[in-house]
Length: 157
Image 1 (cartoon, rainbow, N blue to C red):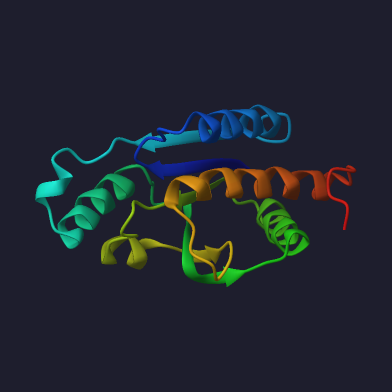
Image 2 (image 1 turned 30 degrees about the vertical axis):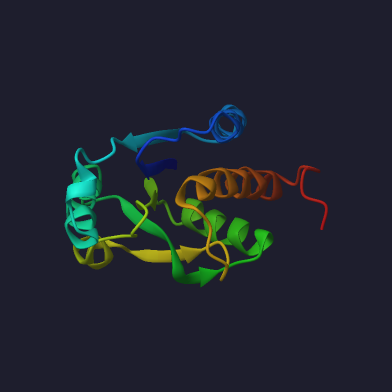
């Protein structure tokens, strides 16, 4: 199974870029993993939140094939423990899922079209995080899930 981490907008904080890059290097030892960044929308300050979400939504959907399983990282999604997330991912692997796409939206979230296309939604917490920080939090949890699946000692719970 291949995992694609689809992100809207670039990260301008070095500590976030470095953290994401570190976990990306770790993850490729477990499965095919790719990060795709959708460029920031130009002239977004002249757009309403709805217009910005629509443009970002179109760009997200352009990156997802009909065969992909699309999972939105969304505050209204299902919450898992780390071991629960690992079990969920392992179930996807065993079921023969070819490509699992996890998407992080822009600052206003996802468009209605993206919600309609999504196969599921996953929440990291009921707390609200900046969308750039979610990148680092999720990629670490994805790495943790892989170590749990493999029975490696990274996870100490």
